[in-house]
Length: 442
Image (cartoon, rainbow, N blue to C red):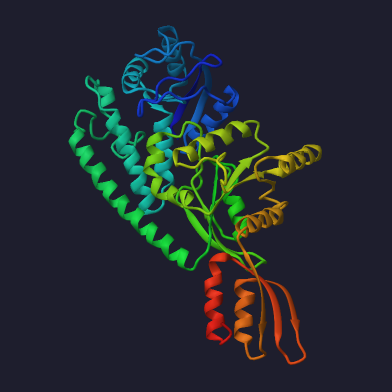
């Protein structure tokens, strides 16, 4: 197993991070505590089966354009690399191509920044052709940004299939035009994926079932919640990015409402912009969802910071959680990890929250009925109540009502006719009217 030294740069409190090398946008100050950032970085590294030789918090008073760290710190880290006998350094920070080149030369080791590490994880997790295409697009976009002159022999020998692979094509041999040609080809393939997904969504609207998308910070318990609601055997591990390709299942409520529940890739702080762009085909399900369930690990010390990270990604997709009419329910998950008094405080906070919030435990099932009730109520805001009188010969229509509507009240008259008071989704009302017409009751 390859060993890695993990470095977590810690800028002074309130100081902005360096420019992201891929999009040039200045990011807001880190919201996560250094200790939690280190724990998350270790989790990311372990997600691709690397052994963490050591994980250090490194003060970063002033990022250096050439090496990120000051010369003294670079020399200090060099000594640590030699002592640990590791040939890989993971920096949980944005590293420019020049910084990467200089650090690799100074340390005699491969250097991988946060973006490269997340790309490695995504490369391991992609299971479908669509997922692999999206990962390859992000990889190539990242590699293209790394093409710089004057790479030494060490830096030229970089893996071909990833950043941690064996010797492959050299950086100097990677021609920009060839990269761009492949990027264009992948984008064309993904455009077809988008069209196919659009057709599938159009088909679902004809059914029509509302789509409810689950989003949240990675490892917040999204897949466990998905499994709890649907009974599906979706991979649910205590591991970052355990879910990459979207999974969808039909769910039927006691009210007879049917929905399509979609589990999506987890979000993370400083999610590379190129990944948001590359996975847009997958995230279209979130953009077009009728309702979004934002799953939060409410027992995590960084729960609020994680919420803001997720909302930044949603904003990148054009979804404003604070906008009027935003159809988002916060699912405060992992209730079982809190002490009883904390659970009581949380339930009180949820009842007073300006946003729709439901405390649950996806593991034990506590609060799931309340969550399903909240989903049913929100999706049923435009439901229609109707009173129908059906003759004794309309048994088939009565069965249809029980399958597709919520029968609130039912009485049988002396002549065998049945009077029903039903609540039906607005989008199903035309289908009911067609059923009534076929039965000669329209």
